[in-house]
Image (cartoon, rainbow, N blue to C red; front, side, top):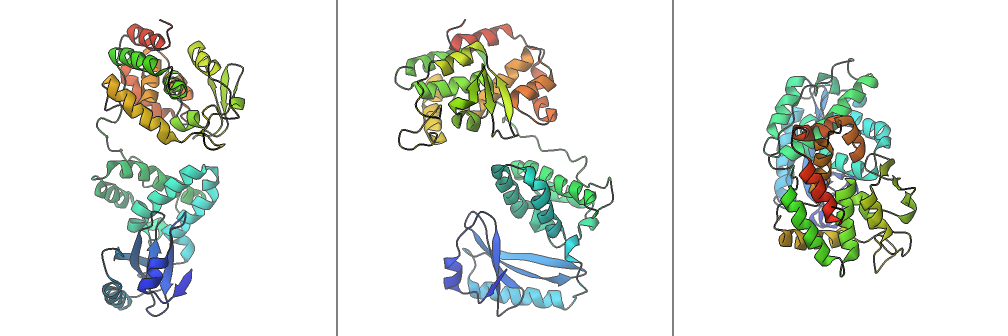
Length: 373
């Protein structure tokens, strides 16, 4: 870590990196500045207290001046040091174990997943558990932390599995007793209105609107149809290469959950077969040799959903629609999970309440989008 004299000019010159980093002040020991990937800079103090490392955030560098931050740091450090006790071995500190987990277990994560997980680690997890002996963290501690995030349920729901992985791996590495994961039993927050499925009427209207754009925007229309007909993620279709399409299947090498095979229906194959092949990408950029930016599809979708009168529907909801139809047709949760590329079938359970609904109209409407019904 860097130890330099913290000044206004030096703070201004600090550039964000892919992961958070900090610089420590050479004049006031225990005072420093942390720089987040977002570009935010925040003052902090660090010291040892009651057998553990103490890390406290003073405030954002954009809202508190350096002199005031230094003054507060001196007061906080003095208060900490009056009570200072022998330090805990660093390898037992929560943040040290978390880094070990990210380095060892995190090798299985895709780069995008690593980035997101690290952001949540630093924004929601470390502020509560940093500096603590990982073996001392209890279920009550975790429940209190989770409850404190109720105002940001998405952050809470995404942070909890990360914390659980850290705790589970800590058991494997010998830092906690076996079967002591304090995250066990945490119930995620319910996010209202997140799962949106297109109805039969909406599917019919969408088909008409897509047909009207077919001549001028064939690739954009094909993109949307493939989302509906495959249940793939946006990123999986946007980065599709022609070499991924063979034998009536998509062989996705770099999916969110790793390599997987997507079996294509006849309408889905027809969509791909009708597209001209221009280079290696199915959806190439006109300006670069890379796939077209997802922004292009998002802009087109905003126009389409306005014309279809489904303003609240996101592109990702087309994946939900595919899943809902699969379940309504009687597919099992396990089969639907495989169709969607879910590693954990639990993720697919949110669709099972649809299984007793009539399905014929919905599937006919979906086929009609491609002129098959």
